[in-house]
Length: 423
Image (cartoon, rainbow, N blue to C red; front, side, top):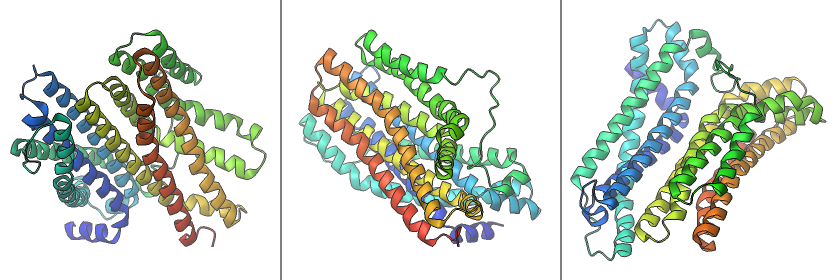
């Protein structure tokens, strides 16, 4: 059984590449921020009464939390991608325990390999980050010295992440039936709305707007902006999860003049519904970091650390988004083949797919950038934040996602040439 799991993982290694990149990146981030936290030259006395250490501890906790969420998110899609394979293990007569071991062997191999890469990358970039921080603090210290405690605690966090991933995978195997596994529609099908209380869809745009209004009427403390922006995260989640998909489905026939337009709207609404968790993570990361960047411009060290956290978070989210669309493409090959059977030409299918990606990113830009710009406006008028800071933050936010969109579009063009759904 273990030999079969390793053999199939080797045959389908392409599906695990993106998960490896995500895990390696999160390992690097965890070790890097643990090193910053444990370095006395950076954090000062390792005491929670020390405000500098407390600040770095909170930032490290936030980054570890984001890493755990993204690792679980990516591994969740990986195990769902292999759902048909898991269904075949059920048909072959493997017990739940053996199926769990089968899955864990594959995940453990990926995690161990990725962790080794992450540690190597950490050893390479840690001196560079330390050099910049020491320059800011005017500290003369050896940038190549690493904290043993930081390394051990970082590895402990990584082991905890591995345990969380394994628990989630075991839960998926336990609660998913054989028919659902074999259908392999865990990602690309609509999810039933099982909420006990179903508020009207129109309430989510109102919650989103309410958060914007509160920014201009509340206090001028950084924590206040984060609290008000929480409404933006909830509102954006609801808009992506309920409002826009339902709106497109209700009005598709009314506003779509061609079959291609109808197909684009229907598929975009499906992608939005399925990526609701990503939007929530994105908004939480944005509202948790951007106000702190704007509010710490007078503290060079804290401001640099927040910029570093923001850049790393956006890179991780971009990698997750690329991975999400890769899996989506694999899952939807049968969908496009069915469209071809209905009479769509290959060029029309290609056009529909590319437009879906562009529509998705347009909605992503609109929902997130509106909040970022309003945070800038509030800090500009209330605290005199410089225009250059605004441009830097926007570049840190936009460049990773613009590159992600370009990569996704390029990969889709290449994969479309090789796919046989319209052959």
